[in-house]
Structure formats: C-alpha cells, structure tokens
Image (cartoon, rainbow over all chains, first blue to last red):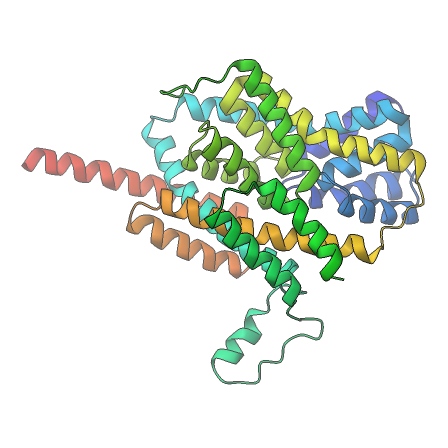
Amino acid sequence: MSLFTLFWTFFKFGLVSFGGGYVLVPLLIAEFVDRRGIISTDAFGNLVSIAQVTPGPIGINSATYVGFTQGGFCGAVIASTGLVMPSILIGSLAVYYINKWKEKLLVKGILKGVRSAALAMLFYAVVIFLGMSVFTQSIPFRSLWNLITFHAPDFPAGFAFSLPAFLICGVTVVLIAKTRLSMTLLIVLSAIAGALICR
Amino acid sequence: MESEEPSISYGKKLWLLFYTFAKIAALVVGGGYAILPVVEETFSRKNKLISSEELLDMMALVQTIPGIIAANSAIYVGMKIAGIGGVLAAVFGVCLPSVTVIIIIAAFFPHLKPENPYLLGAFVGVRACITGLIIVTAVRLAKKTIQGWFEIICVTAFLILALFKLNPVYIIVLSMPLGILYTLYCTWRIKRSGVSG
C-alpha cells in the first residue's frame, strides 16, 4: 500500500468520523481486515486492546498502528497526519468564522443555546464516568427508579459499587476544590492508588 | 482578538499549547470529555487565555465537526490562542505520545497482551480521578455560565434527553434555534422597554 493511498484512506476516515475515535474502529475493520485483508482479525483485536491501555486518543493510536504495519515510521506519521488533517482544516475555519461573527445576532443566539447543551453534556459525562469507575457498569436508571418507588430493584448481574474507586473519586473532588494541587499530579497519584487498591 | 491580552509571548503560547496537549494525551484516558478539566485548569484558570463560555463553545464544536475529539479540542484552543501556528503546535502535542508509544509497541512488543491486573487497576484509578475532576469542572463552569432561567431550563431538559440516550449531536442542533429565539426575545424586550421608558 503506497504512502499516498495510506494518507488518502485516513484523510477520508478523518472526514467521516463524527463523534470521535470509537467510530473509527469499525471503519478500520471494514477497510483493512475485510476489504484489503492486510491485517488479521487477531492482530486487529490486539490493536484495539492496546489502543485502550496506552496513552493517547484511541483514534490516533489505531491510525499510528495501522500506518506502522503498512509503512514503518513514515507510514505511522502519514496515517496520523491524514486522520487529523480534515479536522485541522474544518476546525480552524470554524473557529475563525465564529470569532469573526461573534457579535452577529445569529451567532450570538447559536452560542447561547449551544453553551447550555455543552453544559448538559458535561453533567452527562459525569454520569458516564461514574459508570466506568465508581460503578462497574453504566448506571441502570430503571433499577434505580424501581428502588425509589419501592419495587424490587433487580440490578443487572455485573453491576457493583467499587469502594476504592469511590474513595479515589471523593478524595480528588475534595483536593481539587480545597487545595492548589495540579490535576496532572492527582491523575498520576490515582493511577498508583488504583494499581494498588482497585484490582 | 481578546481585549486584555496577557503578557505571554507567541513562542511561549506555542510551547504551552504543545506541552499541555502532549500531557493531556499522555495522561488522560476515557475519551473526549475527560480532557476538559485539564484544559480548563491550564488555559482558563491559570493563564486566562480562554473564557468559561469559550470552553463550552469548544465542547459543542468538537462534537459537531468530524474527527478525534481530543484533536478537535486541541485545534479549537490552538486557533483561539495563537492562530494556525497554535493549531499545529497543539495537534503535534496530541499526536506525539500516541505515535511514540504505539511505534515502540508495534516495533518491539508486537505480541503484548495488556491483561495485567495492576495495569487494569491503574486505569480504574485514573478514571475515578477523572470522574472527580469532571464533577468539579462541571460545577465551576455551571456557576460561571448560568445566567438565568433560560440556561437552567435548557441544561435540565438537555440532561434528561441525554440520559434517555439521545445523540449529543441532535441535542446540540436542537439547542441552536432555542438560543436564537431567546436572543431575539431579549433584543425585542430591550427595544420595547427602550421605547416605552
């Protein structure tokens, strides 16, 4: 696979991956495992699990890995560059025009509405993250509703509360709200604490 | 573009963008929303280069344009702070940890199976910490940006829609006409009171 084809393939992926890196994984499987057959299903499964436990966004991790298998170091760089290129073009233009027109009534109105949506997303993110840390699964609201209305709560089988994770989360909230410790330091300390108590 | 430009040189802004986004990409796991706390800490509270409102604009924009959410956020912050040079510095920062680590793994440990219990525990720890960081950031941004009944009603309604699994993109699209209508209503009210008073 030539470096240009590699770049163009990932450029197209960058153009259609609305919603972030997770959307990319099925696209990669369709292109490189099914259509071209240049990466085995096994190797791809391993790639996804590696991409999740190594630093960096999953999308860029996967692009780097696929690029490396096709063209070594250059391939890795070219695949990642191709993937982010459409975002760079579209994103820069969008920010440029938002800045330019931010006093226009229409843009003001759009931003007014969008900020509320973004704030709601952020609170929703709290719920999602609770389901990935303090609880072992996403929070089942139906069961909670049953609990409140005095019916049998019937929580799903794998759903459990993790006290160590709850402690890490609670301590983080208190430390960030009350002290001037940096967030990165807290993340590193939590990784160590997690390795020791969250097994 | 900002009225009170802080005394940070262009070169220093580029370094700050590169360094912060490299740090974020290397440390933060869990996808798009997870990076917001560190962005808020660095660019909003410490260096006053971006406002709380602009951070919310960023959250909405990065989900409506295609691409990796972390990279899109880097592009937004980079463009706001230092133009196209800032975009390149921030995107380079986001990509560098991935490219380095994955190339090392692919070249030297192609059969690595990441099922070490300590490693998995560390990930639970990091996610629990990020949960806490997002809680604090969400409350901070809410305090700074909620100005009246419009925001309170919208945020509550949108949160309920999100909990019912409505796609975030639809929520963002839905919020736009509501914001436009409210802004028109506000200007109409100001005009009317201007005429009568």
